[in-house]
Amino acid sequence: MQLLDGKLISAQIKEELKVEVQKQIENGGKIPHLAAILVGTNGASETYVASKIKNCGEIGFRSSLIRYDSTVTETELLDKIIEINQDDDIDGLIVQLPLPDHISVDKVIETIDVRKDVDGFHPINLGRMAKGLPSYISATPFGVIELIKRYKIETAGKHCVVVGRSQIVGLPVSLLMQRNTYPGNSTVTIIHSRTQNLKEICLQADIIIAALGRPEFITADMVKEGAVVIDVGLTRVEDATKKSGFALKGDVKFDEVAPKCSYITPVPGGVGLMTIAALMTNTLLSARKEIYG
Image (cartoon, rainbow, N blue to C red; front, top):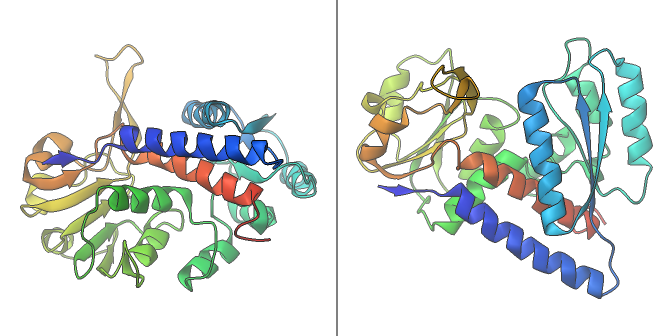
């Protein structure tokens, strides 16, 4: 069993980006600028956004953080997004999810200028990705694909089972794994909460990508010997033994599944860090206008 070390690979990517940014500035190019909007005081969201801002500084990007109380109206939030869309100095914009119930996530995502949608959530980016056209690839699926690529895991002809069908992870990563390139050319099955014979389907998988959001859902009796297991899940679970009062759990019961795998991602230290590296990569592409000129 070999760990797919997201901490190691994301550090390599960040160093590569840092060098690219320095070259760009030396050649008279602009400093990439990422703006993040945070609504409310959700603890996990605070942590995620702080990490993204920190990574910007380490790589050499500029960053702006715009905060709103959870009582902000949908109109106020959409007006701010439109204002950022029109700011030529800002290359990328992310709105941290989840949002309060009174704000439509779809309206927010569709209001973001597709040229600044470095999270890759906009329907235009998803549609262009599905057609194999240049686009910003959703950050988490991008991170998964890059991890597979950097470890040179064979995907052609393999049966890839994606557990979860969200538009943020499950759907886009399933499209990426079946495209005619590397990584890709897999036979892909998507399973979800309504799937019958879920365990039997998982046992057929050469590659499992778990993105259901249910802690330790994938157990050893669902994984065949030698499978590659990529755990996208990250859930806070109460744990009195921890100083923080909680532990981070993935969708895979790591301790019992890992001995059966050829490769597996840890949680934390796996896909989460790759997601941020992918977001930074998309922001540099945006600053260079390499996707949408």
